[in-house]
Image (cartoon, rainbow, N blue to C red; front, side, top):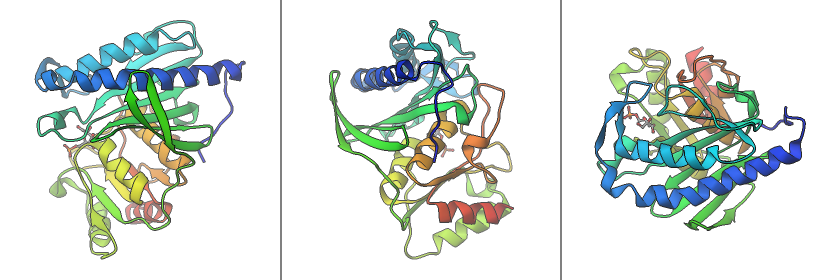
Length: 297
Ligand code: P6P
C-alpha cells in the first residue's frame, strides 16, 4: 500500500497543502476543458520528450503553473511541457503534472486527462516521496480521482467552485475483465507478445484501449484487469514519463489495492535522476501484474 509519513516537519501544513492542490486542480479543470476546442492545433514547439506540443498542452500548463505555484506550501513545479522544475516558493512540497495527457487524441475528440503528483521532496523525486496523486478525466462527465492517506476517492467536478465526492475507498474488483496494451505489436518484445496473447485468449476478458492513458487507466480502476505501455524493441524504456505519469499512476493503483510494475518491480521503486526519464508501465490486478513479471523474467 503506497502510504507514508511526511518528510517535512509539520505534517498538518503538508496535509493542508495537499487539500489546496486538490482544490486548485478541481477549480482549474473546467477552464482547461473550456479552452480545448480552439486549441486542437499543434504549437510550434516540441516538449522536452521531443513530442509535438499541442496548443492545449501549453494552455493547460500555463494555467496550472500559475495556480499551483501560487500555493504557500508548494516549493517546486514541474511539468511534461517544461525542461526543468521551477522554484515557485518556499513550500516543502513539490508538484509535478502532465497538464494534458493524451492531447494528441484531441484531433479525434478522444478522452484526455490531467495528471498530478505531490512529492514531499525536491524534483526529480522518487516514487516513495509521493504523498498524493490523482487525475482529472475529461470524459462525458468531468471526474477526478485522488489517492492520498491510503485511500482512493472519485469526485465529479461540476464547475470552478464545486466538486463532490461520489465514490470513496475505491479498490479494484477482484476479477479483472479488461486489458489494454500500448505501442505497436511488431515493436513488442517476444516475452511481452506471448503474455499479451495469453491474456487476449482468455474469454473472460475484453480489449479496452483508447490511446489516452487516463481513459484506459480509469477503465482498469473501474473494471479491473491490466493496462500496459511496455518496453518496446525501439524504446526499451517505453514511452511514459516517470515523474508525471508512471509514479502517480502506480501510486493510485497500489493505493487501490492493485499492483504496478516496470516489468520487474513496483513503479514506485524505479529510481531515475532525469526529470523526463521514462519507464515501461504495467498496472492492474496483482495476479495479472505478477503473471506479467513472470513472463518477462
Ligand atoms: P500510442 C498519449 O500520447 C500517451 O502519452 C498516453 O496517454 C497514452 O497511453 C500513450 O501515449 C498512447 O501512445 O503509441 O498508443 O499513441
